[in-house]
Length: 367
Ligand SMILES: [Zn+2]
Ligand SMILES: [Zn+2]
Image 1 (spheres, helix red, strand yellow):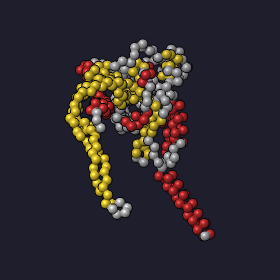
Image 2: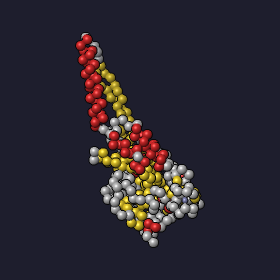
Image 3: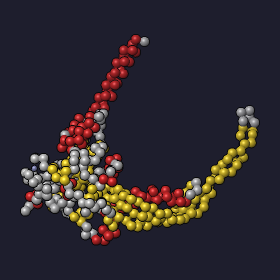
Image 4: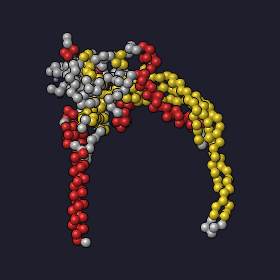
């Protein structure tokens, strides 16, 4: 049987493909309206051992669904995974129509959990239309984004890491002390007078020690197709609502293949937790000022989860520049780049200048 003929969730009444419906979280037939609950495992979304996964790779690898297809955007290189009847369509990240043929999806590290879409495509598109109409000086080309197909639901890959840390440091503790200094000044009458003032100095002491830390669910985006500040702007995610991964959630949506692998993701997590460790070290050094000369951190009990988070994404080009729009698939929050229309701004500036000119001519002649 050809891959495209595999139907994961055929409708028992009419045979069409059931799609995940964000409104109620049921698999729903778009033709006859038949509904089915997504089978839920009782298990919690649990962490996995980082070391073990790195050692045994590719042991815990899976395809997102038995009939999952994968396509790579010929323009930006992003790989999307989807199941029929979903099609490759337009690339969510750079906006080009994908023309390469989908192939059977390669395995990835098994997702542990996801947040299902709870905002529908219609609601996301309506919010987007409103957002676009509220923009000042947006070029008319943006109107294309008011079309319902302009954004598409895609699960974005993330890693979360837990770890306990022990950090050995050496540094110096600075303590302030004050000395009274005598100085001379000339007062308003021209007399030379003696005055005193308190001057602050710092005395430095060697310091060294150990601090412990515990970090839970450090969230790292595993995509390179979206700028990290945009993804950060979509937060917070209600991660306490995570559902164990089930391919049914993918029905009618796409998922992006991670571009940041498990090991690289942990390097990024270290950077995220570094400021917390540093401030713990400074607190441990104490005093009024601190200098850190060396830091050595051991990471123990590292565990991770591969998560998929729901986003409606779309992209368009304006004057050769790429603009991306994101809608949080849980909250409907919109984050996006926006262009300014040179001509609209130029027109306004010219209008203001003409009005000023007229005012000057009218009132200037009267005086
Ligand atoms: Zn049906
Ligand atoms: Zn692309």
